[in-house]
Every structure is written in C-alpha cells, then in structure tokens.
Length: 166
Image (cartoon, rainbow, N blue to C red; front, side, top):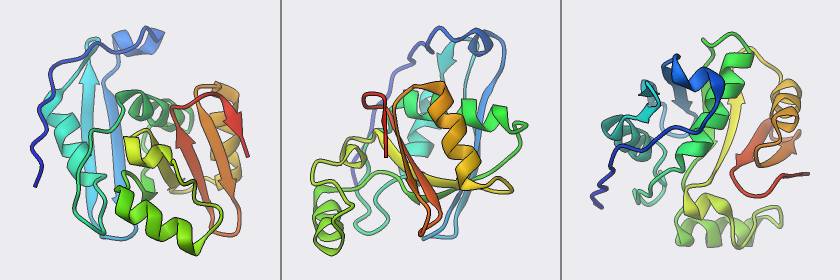
C-alpha cells in the first residue's frame, strides 16, 4: 500500500472559498462505501482529509492509490453548492491504475488510453436527485475542465484538463 504525504495547500482564489467549508459527500457504486468529508476551509486544504479522499477514490480493482487533484474536488464542491450543498456524488470511477485503464480501454473505445483518471485528475459521477444532464450543464457553465456526458451509462465525466466537452 502506498503512503501519500500531503502538505497543506492553498485553495484557489474563489470568492466563496474564503469563508465556506469545502465539503463533499460520496457513495462509491462499486464498493458500496460512503464518505462525508470537509476537505478544506479558511483558504486551506486539510491534508488528512485529502488522504482519506485519495484512499476512497483509489482504483478499487487493484487497490492502488494516487493523489486526487484538489482542483477536481473544488469543481465537485462548486457543483454540489449549485444544487443546494447537501447532495451525494455517486462515484463510478475515480483514480485508475495503468493496468485497469488498459483493461478498460480494450473493452471500450470510449476509454482514453492516456486517461486523466490515471493522474488523479478525473472522476465519473452521478449526483443523487439531480439528472446527469443538469450536472453536465452545470459543469459546462463553469468552464473549469473537461466534461463528458454518457447518457446510456447515466454518468458525467469531469476532469481538470483543458476546457472541452463530448
């Protein structure tokens, strides 16, 4: 098991970040586990909370962990706030190891061979009580990274790469 050391990091200069705690609620669709966590406040990220998130969003197939980009968490937090601040993200995929990504890309042409999931910069989610179309539109309006819509599988891909959509 990898040990991840995280130092306190500054939050981005987003107006609500200065005063509001940054909280997320997750339910992992493959493991059945839940995580409710405050990962930042007072313009700082909480290193212990980030470590818990890294563990929660690890590759559930291999157990490998990788640091999750805090800016991805900020995108999720902003989306959550837009829908009332109490909703849970249903996680389909967080971090993916090279091995897992290669296996998935052999099964589907929709899996990128150089996926940002392998860098901890992408997540596939749904949000309880909100249509995936509304989540997609909210993320598109923010223009803070990549947004993919997978209607048949009912999830939205979010990442911290360049602004783009599919």
